[in-house]
Length: 424
Image 1 (cartoon, rainbow, N blue to C red):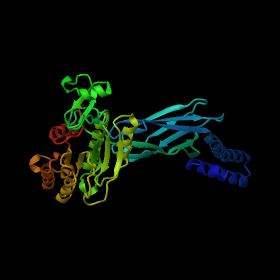
Image 2: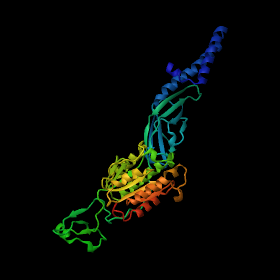
Image 3: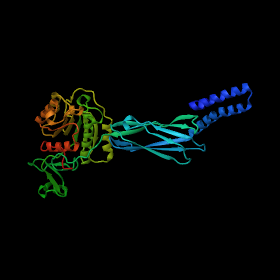
Image 4: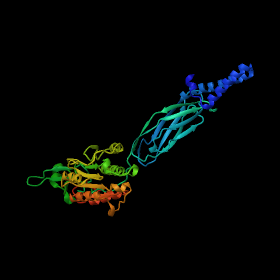
């Protein structure tokens, strides 16, 4: 009873107090009719409180995220299902779902009458602007009676996990190489015989030049094998992301770090879907994801999930001390780096292996000017040092279209070692 009385609203408590006062007056004045009215006034909020307390346990709900993994900036929906069990009717229900500020405004629904035996569906939109793991909920219900005398609050559903992955844009083309288009698959190195250098061969594909058929290997394997003139791409591509807080500028979705993460996600998925293995590492060589060129969406999700939860690092400078790509082809997305860090990064890279870099003009992301004539001195120096070391370099400022940056990087990297074979 005490728990039920705790749900009385201000109106219900005033009515209860008025009934008690009327009962006291009726006893003092010996007015039986007034006493009957007082008893009715006192019993009304008490009966309502007991009824609401009994009916509130009969309400259930469920929450469905559509979808439960969403790209930053893309719209989504949350579907709520509400139902009533048992024979006791339920009064008015006020629903409020806990939504983080990053997902939009907090939704509220008023359900005047819940039908028995079937659920009602409620939907509201969400549009996350920042990547990360968001918690939707809890869903709270406030049950009231038609007179507004009593209300109870109850948590119907706890938290639901929403994964907000970086935005992925479509990319085209790949840096030119041996023209294999097959990643690691089908690359076979054979001894062609004494006195002849090692020959790299692969299976014949429709459209291959018949003049490149390697007849000794064809005879040995009893299937047509084609000679490859250059060493094919082997071992995959390593994508390096510089995510140091000191290397980036700006805040929110327009920050240089968010641009870099979105670009890295687009590049990794584009290369992997082209049939090539991708390793994603940080500026200190820490492995974030390793996805083969074959396989389904699970590998794409592994890359996106690793980037969704990535937080800025607190190191002041980029210090690798080794080749972060371990001899593989490298695509580095760098923020503001010192000349010493650039020299160290280039020092450990093999000269014959392709190295590409996108250097962000990070001051432009803080409201500066990103025109070539106004780029930061540190950005230009870093780009010049990398080019001098044989790297293909593209400088990107605030608002730079990612497909354009990638296309320019592909053109810049032409003829600089080998990254991957074929074209998109």
